[in-house]
Image 1 (cartoon, rainbow, N blue to C red):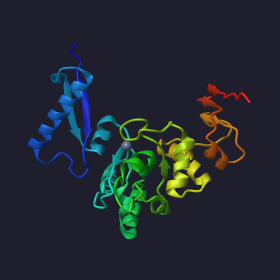
Image 2: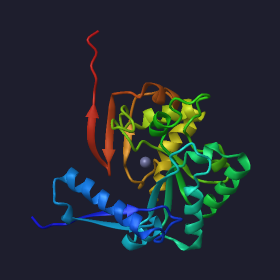
Image 3: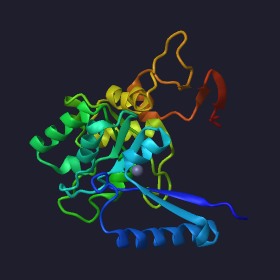
Image 4: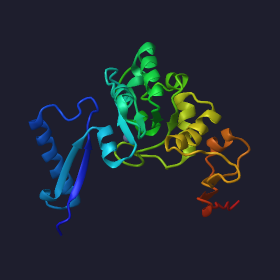
Length: 259
Ligand SMILES: [Zn+2]
């Protein structure tokens, strides 16, 4: 088989394509060897392309989702750099995910970044499973690994929530369930239930440039559960569900009680 595997490495937006070429080549060789071992193909079939996020987005004519600043180090500023690059001219759309370090910065620094992020039209996605599990381990006092949600929202940034690591080394639990994520937003981010649900539903739809509403003619991508309030739905995360995708009922889950 002679097919090639292309690995697209998205680099720090501030570094663009410069930096130490030898270091980059060594890193590319290491990555190619790793991918080859994983895929069980010869390393010669793995091609590594190194691009900054908005250049990679331009290559493919697609928006970018930069997973950045997954650290409690307040000096990490990938989000601000992304906003700057987008404002310089990238109109395909950009999202930034994690952005933990922003939550560790002084309020005035957070606010200045949040203003630029809002101006750039960048949505921020909170991923509480991953960053509550990864950040703050063994530290005392123990910081909370979430971005500056309140500051971002106050600046007008669309802040959604999701789960990008499920039952993997970065998060050994997780059920790919929006109720679970909304519950974490209530407990770890101090969202009220309705706001928490909005972050995993309509705000998440906004990230994907979709519009979430229940109305005639709107896309029928729905999940139905029994609950008398949003809070109750988040609290129970009912197992009994009906799911519609694009107007088609795709699953019905019923639990039975022996009692
Ligand atoms: Zn991620």
